[in-house]
Image (cartoon, rainbow, N blue to C red; front, top):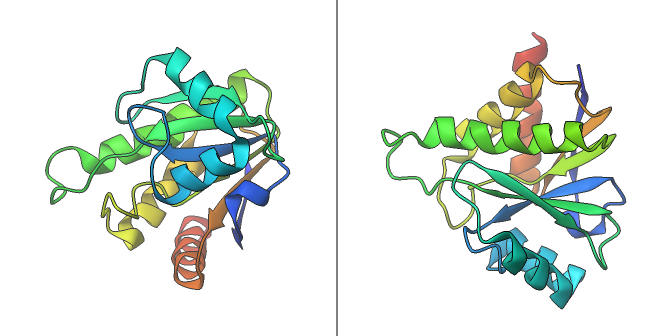
Length: 169
């Protein structure tokens, strides 16, 4: 079982094996955390993304971290919230599972996740935090030593900590 922790930080500053990018399907950069990661990593990241030919919702792909402190970036495409009856919870869980599968297969010991899909994709933040924590807790692979939920604001930290307490209850 992976150790899980919650921090409030800018994910682009973390010195970990891999950070997860809440990417769009083009993998060429966008807004929010995706834009911040692309700006800090440099133009090589978009070039690497272009070589991957995009990514489907719920899937994940790996690139180098380039100018980031993190050595690798796992790009995952979260679902846009459309009411919850179009498979959004399952697709979000798949983002976390696929990212962990990539981390495990590459021997990463530390991986940091943002709150995937909770920005412009409008996924309800409390539900997203519960899905994130329960999916990581239930992952059956040889988990990385440390999973960090890297939250941008205090409200997100509180949601993720509450989800962690429920998992450990």
